[in-house]
Length: 261
Ligand code: ADP
Image (cartoon, rainbow, N blue to C red; front, side, top):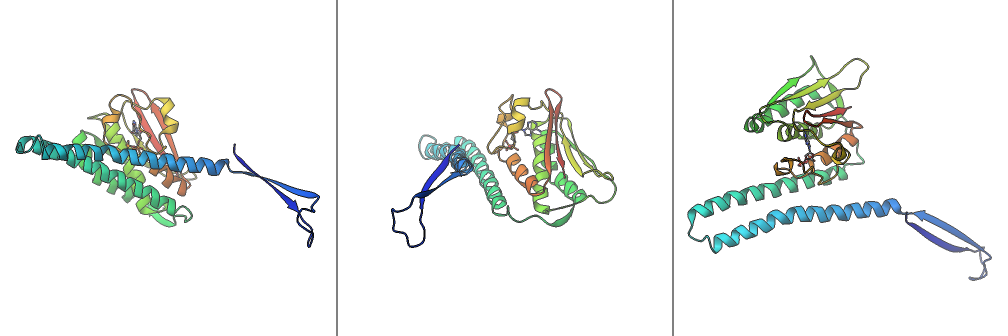
């Protein structure tokens, strides 16, 4: 822990400086401030590193196109494709960084809209169908009759639902089903859960999934496109909504992410 210690003379009014017989000793625990400071600079260092990698690669390809690959239309075509991928990766990263910073700015304002989760989930499923088709994944919805209202921010809840279903498609099993459940039972909290049949997440990684830039490097999970910020954003949004994220995973069987409102 880190403390600031202050010693100040206790002077009676009008007493000459240096005449005090009493002193005030104060301690202030600044460990938390230090920790936040360190987290902030780690975050900036990580973000810069993540942006630097695609930038370095872009520069490399531009130099190659200007130099050794000059006049080689086939090579240029290939390199431009890779450059587009890198630029897309940078855009995603900047979008995610902006999302996090906007959430931090809003942290003192509680979300207060009445949001029906049924159309939110249906809309996100439709938006993710092209990705799911590419990956050969079928997204199955299990929605209750009627509305499932929660108090929140619609756009932020869309982001949560989107991130969890997208992850299930990306890290789940190709050609398998992703089941999405929304449940509302009398006297029970509203729950939203996404079940995949992927390789699962080793237990030691689970508590760290919502850390910024944390990605699990098992099997081919690292090769999937991502920023490592998705679940950090989800966690941030859920904290604002006083909702919990529960992760259950079994190696070789799959993973279930549940949001309990
Ligand atoms: P990203 O997907 O951009 O890498 P996230 O914060 O959304 O970042 O996820 C962090 C990591 O958690 C992922 O890189 C992946 O390794 C792991 N992960 C997330 N969802 C799943 C899932 N459904 N199954 C297996 N691993 C997952």
